[in-house]
Image (tube, rainbow, N blue to C red; front, top):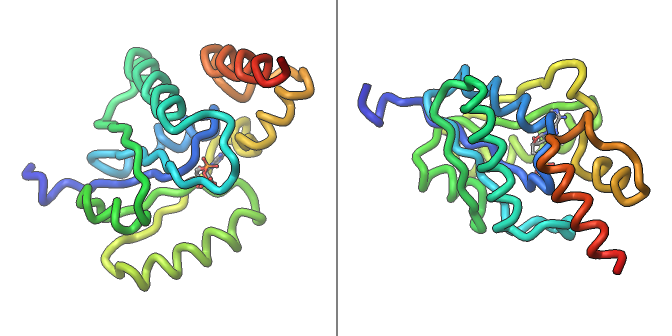
Length: 173
Ligand code: ADP
């Protein structure tokens, strides 16, 4: 198959930090695209807890572990600081993968997808749902629970949990 025939998908997000919900979507996405590019956004206006480099490193780490555990498919991790649609054309993707957690995600995603379609009508948005146990996980809540000393071990990997604890502890000192 030539690269032109390959279906390339971009899964963009802040991944601050990467959760089991993100990984669930990533593994599903690899089944519908030939090559998945996880786009870690630098220009997040959410005041990230982790720097761009740290977020990229953590995503790469999770992907490497998933591959070791038998995940198939081509997965790349890249940072981007441009408009999403520019990043999508740079990597020659034809699909944008997003995850839907609840009805509350829908309105925002619907609006963004509509505007992105105006910017490039050849790129299709594709919405995936995580499995039931991962559906409600959100990075924002994981950080909040972590800050308050709660147990986040069922939401993120042990490695991410350790990074999170260290960062929260460092912020407190
Ligand atoms: P953003 O800052 O763009 O919302 P996130 O890193 O929070 O980025 O999420 C990236 C994508 O992953 C979004 O489409 C989001 O809806 C999706 N996502 C995050 N957590 C989950 C989850 N638990 N189940 C399904 N989709 C999820």
